[in-house]
Image 1: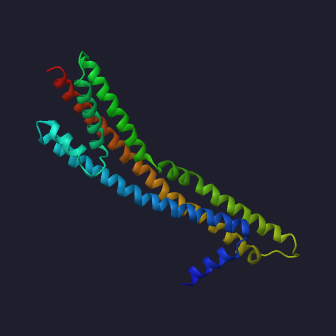
Image 2: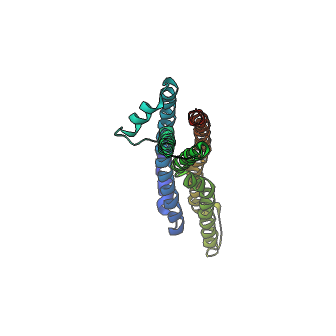
Image 3: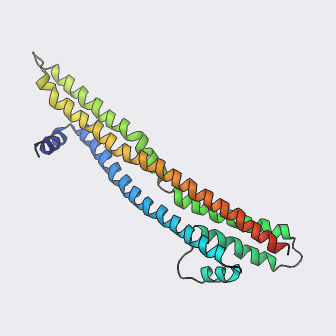
Length: 224
């Protein structure tokens, strides 16, 4: 408990600039942790939805009822469902037109799926750039607070006749707290960014593979 109190005292007794740096780092840490938790939930849900939809997709022979269920459902389709809905809808619409080439029908369906997938990519990658920014800049922000605090400590030595370690130790300790806070904010953000970037990349590859497989099915239907 004494250590906690001493750290709190160091924060409260720090200079205004160092306190401002600490406030920025604490705010960045709270926001990044909020985003880390939300992104974990989103990516886990997207993975589960992809697995469930693939099970449905490969278990049916006629895709029309599957499309009808998705388009008439009350929930907003996302992920693989959204890609399938966009591609099948455009395929059916173009296929009804007279004197249209089969390749043109396939190109239209693929474009619709690509647009839907790009929107899903944007959604999955939301806030990843913020985590990357926090992870890369927080140590430097904390270092700035440390340098500023040490400068103030040594500046205070110029006004005394005899300098001792005890005189500068509190000021240096205050400054080093800023570095610790910078690392505390940066490390989780970097770990989460690397992990979630990998998860997003795997999901995007999964969506892309589904597009290729679905395009092959549509190709057979268009030329049948």
